[in-house]
Amino acid sequence: MAAKTNKGAPRSASFREREYSKTSIWLGRLVVLALVLGLWELLSGRAFNSFWLSKPSLIGGRIVEMIGDGDLWFHMSVTLQEAIGGLVIGMIGGTLLGVGLAFSGIFEKWIYPYMMALYSLPRVSLAPLFIVWFGIGLSSKIIMVVAMVIFVAFYNAFEGIRNIDKDLMDMMSTYKAKWTHKLRWVVLPSITVWLLTSVRLNIGMALIGSVIAELVGSNRGLGYYITYSSNMLDTTGIFTGLVLIMAIAVVLEQLVLLLERRLLRYR
Amino acid sequence: MANDSQPKLSIRDLAVEYKSKGRQTVALEGVRLDVRDGEFVSVVGPSGCGKSTLLKVVAGLLQPAAGTAEIDGQPIEGVPDQIGMVFQNDALLPWKTVTDNVRLPLAIKGLPEKEQLRETERLLKMVGLEGFGSFFPKQLSGGMKKRVALARTFAYDPEIYLMDEPFGPLDAQTRVKIGEQFLRMWDAVGKSVLFITHDIEEAIAMSDRVIVMSARPGRIKAEFDVRLARPRPFYDIRFDPVFKELQKEIWAQMADETSGGDS
View 1 (cartoon, each protein chain N blue to C red):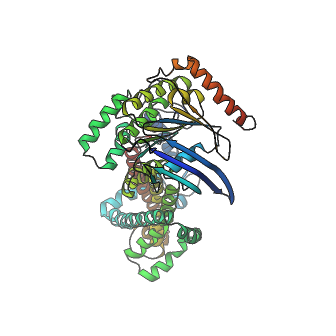
View 2 (tube, chains in turn green, yellow):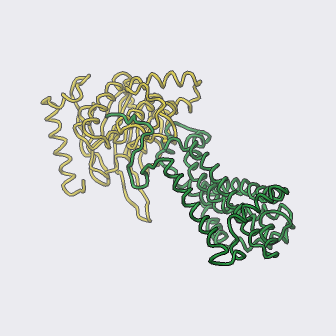
């Protein structure tokens, strides 16, 4: 009956849990990055015309240039606003919808197939419609992002509720817990894992949504910058836009991972 | 509390039916059972005989198809105030520390936080988990988790303890230790217990009365009074001739059942 007091010590139990040192992980990642960028830099202009694929040094130079004249923040902040605004609204809306539907009895059976039907619709194709409805300003972009993220949020919340351990709910009932207690002690902690997954998946979706909407009709934002550059046959501009979008995604995802590590300490 | 003539828990002609995948299964039939105030009653039977179903009815988690179940003369509707349950799989909240798990029933009752923590401390000491308050369940062994679950139920301080094969998943040695500990804790509070198990020895060592259930549909097949003085030495009592005789008789009843069954 010995206690497992070796807190935090690596236990290589199953095949996914093997622990590697932090330095070896990050060193490896840097090597991969350097290799890819190096090859790109070397081959571009030698193996093929750099007009088609640009090259890292040109992209880096462009970014510095854009920081200098304020273009970078101008476009990035717009895209960020759209993506994060839509992400927040879509996550809250979708999660409430999922939780509500999971507890709604027969109503769930009526609504669920239609939610899935809407989910399978390629929502990207709705972008022109939203532009027509809400104009080329911020609101059409946010609506587009909401349309992109709400389904994953809905689905994760719904499945999260359905996966709550029934014994835990029974246990709470035997202690005469009111629903507020059940919510705080069981429901919310149970679906936290699902909500975090949902946010992580949705960061990418939100960026896709905002950029697509910008591509279709706008006069600012990274999506606009990409279309503008492509009209000018400026591949460096296109790649710069892509790199910046990727950077946003990586930073946001790291923030969520940080949050996850705090909230899921008990695992 | 109540007068002596009225049993704490009274079950009459209870039947429970399950409906799953369109098929009706009878889990319990014609069950008749009394538990007096302060009495320790065990129910043994082959797996799948509806022992756990019986507990769920008493806990108000399941509606019987027929018959009545009463606590203190009041029919059970919803979860009764008097019961506290110990689940087979502990039902600990994995995201809460040991302390938070134990103080859960006190928090639900709305006790001031200071009192919750004082009581939690006392109970953890009682089950021998002093200093483990800040651990998460995942960091504990099976036996320790079980003791947290026991401490939590004792924190709730129910009048009837409902125990659903609580020591089932433990290894033999841990089982004996925890059983002994639980028996001592129970001796101190003297509340009624309805204890489900498939372990005959465990049932005899703990109980005032052992009830044998038949395979599905579960019915009460036999009933044995355990005339062994308390407090009992939880392990050594097994060598008592009275114990051995009883064990033989109960086994004879059970063997009858299991010959065609799976377990």
